[in-house]
Image 1: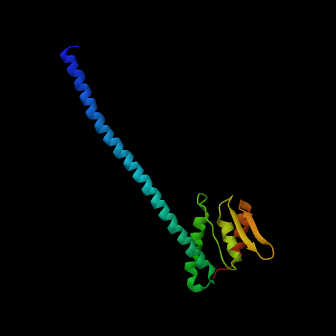
Image 2: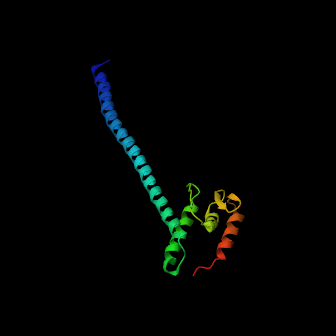
Image 3: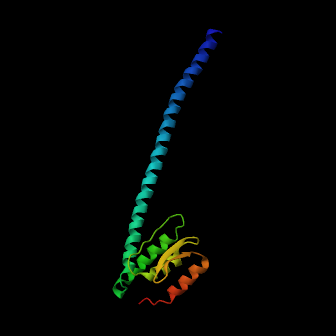
Length: 150
């Protein structure tokens, strides 16, 4: 090999080494950024879920109180919260009601996604399981519309 060809090969190799070092640094930075973004997204989603669980707990507490005209807007907000979170089929929601709140099964059935399951207690019968279908939802909505809200 001539000295000129050897120098060109060496120059090309030197350029490749410099370029590869630069590219490796960029790839490492991009991978780090992707991992960080993914972790932050998961953390934000977890925090949002915690906040939403608290909202549902507050809404249930509101719906467990005796209805009155002074708190009508608050009750409507609580119903909207329940509607919103009952309609998320990708979210698993367990709503545990303590006490005698038999009628809270109706909005759960009315707003749960098709395929969801609602369990409630029925005096003298035990636990009742309702697999949500379009027909069951319509029946629950029809019953809810018979209640008067003052």
